[in-house]
Length: 136
Image (cartoon, rainbow, N blue to C red; front, side, top):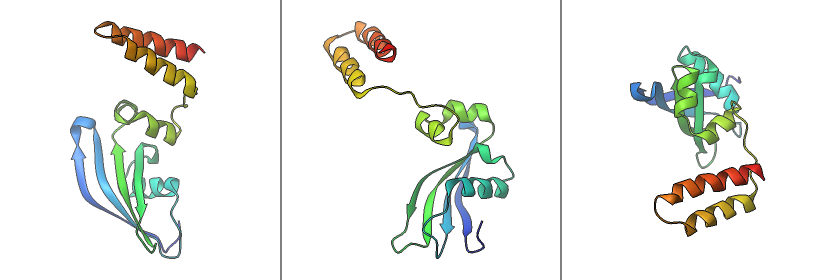
């Protein structure tokens, strides 16, 4: 990582219910457009003496004029907790799971089929519709 990049954390919080540590990360990077997420994972992992695979970074915004970015960081205690509590889209983004390819038409058909059925049968019908969409 370049010498001109400074990584600071603030609002550190231990969250035992979700078995993780969470914090806000400030990156000062003058002369650079942005800093790669993989680069930051290694740096934050080193700062908190943990494996970089357990570090999840998201929600980064670059300040107007550049030179400073702020985002959110979550460090899980183990891989099981990460897979259990982290949203699917972030797990896919990290590369620990593959994205399911589902056509737009199949999703819409399943949604509209579910709207027609009322009561307790709705959840069963939704399940069947999702299965049918996956098979197509």
